[in-house]
Length: 594
Ligand code: GTP
Image (tube, rainbow, N blue to C red; front, side, top):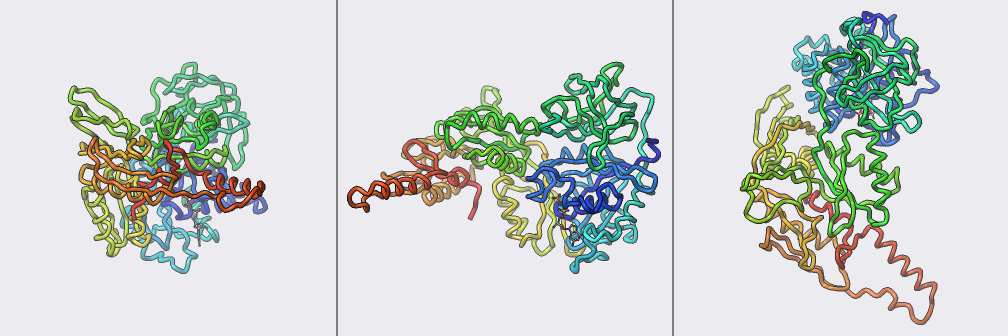
């Protein structure tokens, strides 16, 4: 295709502002999906995506419109996947900035807009859901215009649900988004903006060609890993894959298949070139995904350890950001320490392990990564709180911090500041988006955000606040390890790293929560919280004698067996820690504040 006829664009939006629904409508209006085979969220292929109604993986579709080729690149909308969003944006020249006309601008609207602006994209401001009775198109058109510096009348108004305004939006993409430019005669350079594992075909790599040309049966080189492969298949998605004998030229967006089985060999952000006479310089900005949050995963039944390993291996084929290594816990046995991009990523992985692989897992409370500098200058990266060094030899501890942006109606400023201050936040600034909506920026430790910060924020603002955060380096902090002891033995899976000023309250709260969560046993169980050798809190779980068989007189065997089985059933989600039965909830007790 002549690059002059190509328009590459993406839709960026806050979660739930209707990106997938609008994409569905575009598929239908351009005729690539007929009305009969249309189903909601056509582009979200994974079941778990459809069920949760969120987009995890970006997808690209080719849409014919008015003699042009539009490539629509759907981007993930959640903070954990910001890196994938930014790579998708690099594959485009324009972005539709979609805002719910009943909600207005939210935190991820801003975050995505800033990403799009730094990628130099042409921005098309669009208000969605104008069919809703609660829509306030005039008010929010003004807000949006103020934000990007255009006239309120330039803001398009659509409904992804009814289709109103969608044709005009497509026309607008053709007339306002610049055509791609590249050097057709140069060595091939294509950006990988997505990479998905398919059971039957292996890894499917989505690319945007910047310069040159990629063809079928060509030897290609992945520039970050230096691995070479052969393109077995190359084509475009519209909306099902169609092979293209001509390959892909400048400005085109499509997929290629090389037969590799592991997405880590075909990484998002990497540059593909020809293996022979390839490009010298890769496209800028490639980053390895960096796990920010760690948690321990253990099979409830120790025999399932090999299955857990196999399941993680399989998931990793499709998820280059997932990392894990074997770990042994005195309390929980053999398991893995797993690194995630963020909390949502963690939840998704855990859910897939349980659902798709039928595993029953114990997971420990998530923690961030700490850098510990010892007095002798030695440095330690701590991804498991139980490995935090004790004794007086620590010189400095560093924790990751974020730049967090919170958007909310201005009546909640006080509540929001209180939450942030209570979590060691430092106010960076505050701006009014309109007279009743405010943007508040804070530096916040990531470790404080992962403990139910979002839930607190939502409940204190009646659901109105939205949050976005990005990593912003590290800071030194006064952190200590709090251990929890059952029957005088420290349980490694319960250890947490906490700010010194909060350590005492944390210990007291945890001991109390555990007393409530751990069922009474045949013997007394003392619970203690300690910093080093100093005990800071103590609770007791009193003993019971609950003999279920006592009630069965005589020898009614079948009744006895039934009772024993019932009792076993009740134990399923328990893990033996020493002699004590501990339920799964206890391991994540630290996550809930009440
Ligand atoms: P993520 O993929 O999770 O980022 O969400 P999304 O932005 O793709 O939102 P999605 O398309 O899933 O829509 C969110 C909700 O809004 C769904 O319940 C839709 O049915 C609804 N919705 C989307 N567009 C419209 C619209 O134009 N009008 C109305 N009334 N509802 C809409």
